[in-house]
Amino acid sequence: MSGVTIIMIVLVKLLLPAPIKNTELRNEFWLRKTFANANYDLVVGGDSRIYRGVSITAINESLTSKLEGINLGYSSAGYDLDYLNFLVSKLKPTGKRVLVLGISPHSFTLEGAKNELYHEHLGKGNFDKFKGLYLSQYLKYFAPYKASELKDFFLNGKSEEGYFEDFQKDGWVHSHRLPEDSLTAIEIYQKLFTDYQVSDTLIANFLNRVDDIEKSGIEIVAFRPPTFDMMTNVEDSLSGYNESYMRKELEQRGCTWIDLNPAEFHTYDGSHLHYKSAEHLSKIIGKQIQLLFDQNQ
Image (cartoon, rainbow, N blue to C red; front, side):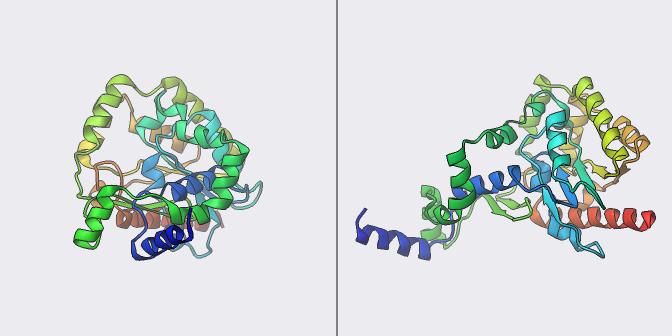
């Protein structure tokens, strides 16, 4: 590559905004989650509704003493024992510890239990891990653009449509979509739950493991991530999930269940929270954690 070409690339990068989908940043984000240190006071687990829906920074705004925390949500994550053990392994061995679990029906299907994104990054080779963890901070400046992004920028000064994501160090993705469409994910979930129902075995194993975790002194806070009302109806009618049963079983094991009013939250695709609603949800979680601490004093 000639010096002139390098200079031209640098100038273009200085003039243009970052690509909407920066593959290098995304890879670094997932690897840093997967290989995070095991020294957190607070760990959050769940599927994409969690990694796009819970900010540790916003949780801490509701706490009198900040917690060192990380969001370990993954796309389509399922609550098999391996994933649950992974979440627990990132908590400190002693002291004040909180595990926050987002409970989505899909997380108890055999499809969710594959945990494909988690295993994809867990199985990365040494070179890919090194590249993602240590070189992506430089390679991100050379991430490619889509032709539509360049067209929007030169015609309108900014991108007019697409999925926008901003990767946070705490494991949260600050996200939104333009244009918004609450029906985007409905058909996907209708097909999903036609093919996959929740598994009684997965639920039983999950509850048994939760019982052990609670007895070890870890506080568990659980909730159903809020979505568009039509999405909730699809899940409740097709998935075989029984929220009343799940809540009752968790509370009997000493867990705290947070009741949420879906009307307080706004999704951009029917499934995932707009970043402002994600921050609102996170502050509610923080208030519940603070209440737990106050009760235990």
